[in-house]
Amino acid sequence: MATSDTQYMTMDDVHNLNKDKEKCIFIIDNKLYDVTKFLDEHPGGEEVLKEQRGKDATDAFEDVGHSNDARKQMQEFLIGELQPTVKKSIEKKPQKVNVDELNNESSSWMKWIIPLVIAISAVIIFKLFFK
Image (cartoon, rainbow, N blue to C red; front, side, top):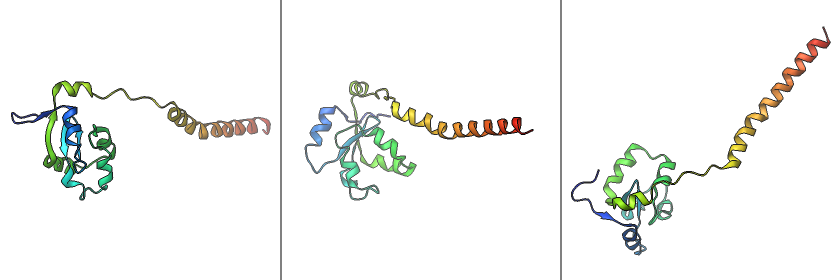
């Protein structure tokens, strides 16, 4: 939660701070983090952090599944928050449904259900004809 001394910034501020190529500042959950001093220590390597420079890295951060310790450690690098008006403009967009993935999921269970149905049918036919 924001305190009275919270520094609010816009996306322009974030981009301006990142003009210095030595800096690595990004956004996670509408909070700004300067992880420049952490680049060498990051267990996943500095490149994954640098890829997020100047961006909203919330999804990338959550996709990795960081530990509670990592989440606590983030507080060391907190430098501010996005202005409330900016927060609304970068709210998560609805995720697109990948039709190919849905097709693959449905076809994967079809790969074993069809042979199962055929096998059961063969057993029933065998028992009916060879009684």
